Length: 167
Ligand SMILES: [Fe+2]
Image (cartoon, rainbow, N blue to C red; front, side, top):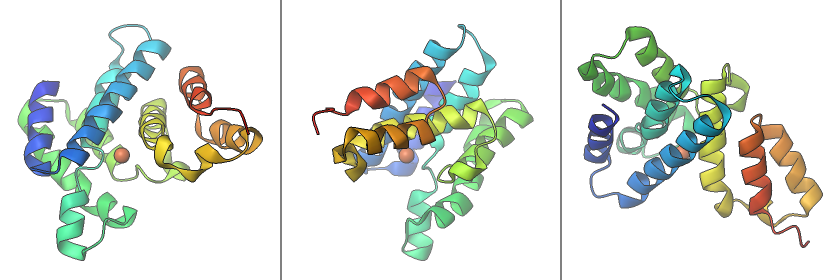
């Protein structure tokens, strides 16, 4: 089932291999966090993986309609596209709505309202951290950012490990 969603994501992103790679990287990271934090077969993993693959799915439409990839436009355009993809899968309605809720708020830390959303937040951040200036700040500043953003032990450790700690 996840493979079908991956195919749909690739169709939406077309020749934008950077976005496809990002979705795959976030999926890999999110799966790792779920496996580390929860027993095998946990329900949360399904929601997290679907959200990971589709979290940025509104970005093309946002750029096409508003000439902007600002979070507000992604949050507006992502859920309807995700819903139309997920509706074809036979997934339970509440799972579909939960995934769409996460996609529709995924840039807003203040909107995190469950561990599924939290893990998506951590996975997206872990994948993006190498490009963020905070990675080059002193370790104390960096550590503060980590503790403000990571709730899972696995995610926090992975984030801390990214910092060279030599400054
Ligand atoms: Fe992302």
